[in-house]
Length: 150
Image (cartoon, rainbow, N blue to C red; front, side, top):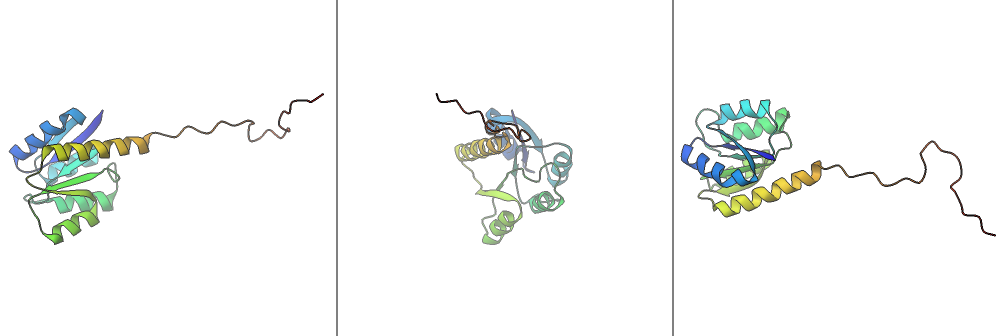
């Protein structure tokens, strides 16, 4: 089951996103950037939903930390959900680590659909491809078996 981290300083919005995403997996919530960074350093998440403008440690700091420090969640997809409609915020977020930037108010069906798609893609990348069948072992120098024709 997927593990999703929802980060927003507004408890009502955080709860709404958590309830909407719950069918997709286990949900953890963080009420700001500092608690989010602690969670991100302690556990691997399959998806992060992040607000940009929060007191003290904002979403840009979280994005920068994910993209520069690496760690458990370096490759975790991040959806930024913000009321900031500025072109500068969009560019800055997408250049950092975000794969989507959604403007509040967000249609929950859109968030669910994008999240489900991102989780499926991540699961497909994580599933190892089985090796192709091999007729002979690499160290076997004998010629391949050939049926004798009479």
